[in-house]
Amino acid sequence: MRHFLTLRDFSKDEILEIIALAKKIKKRAKAGKFKPYLKDKVLGMIFEKSSTRTRVSFEVGIHQLGGAGIFLSTDDIQLGRGEPLRDTARVLSRMVDMVMIRTFGQERLEEFAKYSTVPLISGLSDMYHPMQILADYLTVCEYGKDKNLIVSYVGDGNNISHSWLMLASKLGFELRISTPKGYEVNAQVLQDARKFAQISGAKITIYENPKEAIKGANVVTTDTWVSMGQEAEKEKRIKDFEGFMVDDETMKLAREGVIFLHCLPAYRGYEVSESVFEAHANEIFDEAENRLHAQKAVMVWLDKQR
Image (tube, rainbow, N blue to C red; front, side):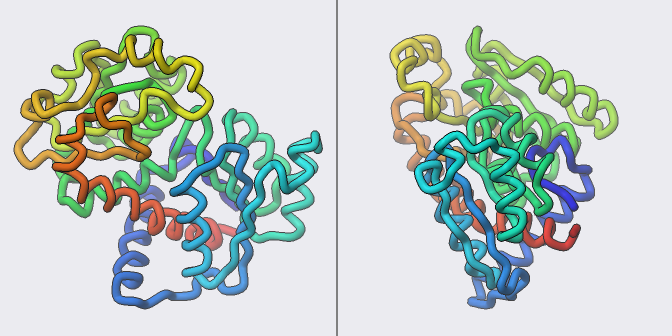
């Protein structure tokens, strides 16, 4: 049995296998055909952090696969009243076929997985957001940018940048990351990525200047500067991130035909300009839709591993 907590745990072949499955499932869905891969299976969905896209995509996804989803906020279950996470894991493992958790610390996912006898999927943690990056890479492939891929990530050294590091280091493409001082990527994650890159041939470079990072890239991506739980830091972060907005001038430095990705929600005038966002809206909302198809592929793939 396998869990899906971080791309660190997956090989290149496994990641590409899941992407191929996502393409197949999406193609069938677009034709109005839904194969019941998970007929009568139940997905428990625990939300310690709220979300629009994660909830809708998982709930619709398990339905389209022939199963059912149960939404569980911390207000709905004993976890919110102090029940140990390991007990919740052991109880749910006897009642549902798979669990998705959107939470704060990565260690909470790891503890739950330790005691769970059913597959666990990360819907996000403060350290990683692997499902989002699978959806991003699916989008990259659909736009034909997966050959000679150069990804430039500009912004906060957060769970999105960490997941890009894992993906690049496993698949072997070039990744450039530019963050403000004080907002660098996690040192251990970077070290792990560079270790994997020695095997895959990935090129990983950290830049201080976002314009240098974007030169010649064929995929540019960013994320909100103020994530959930960081609202008290908003004014300081906006000041610290000055010069890191992806705008028309910086996009001109990228390769012709560049695509722009954003995991949403996007705050125009901060991490991305209104004009860049609207010019690349098709890519961004294809990316958002691909959460649905990538997640279905992961659920089907995990079920087959049992």
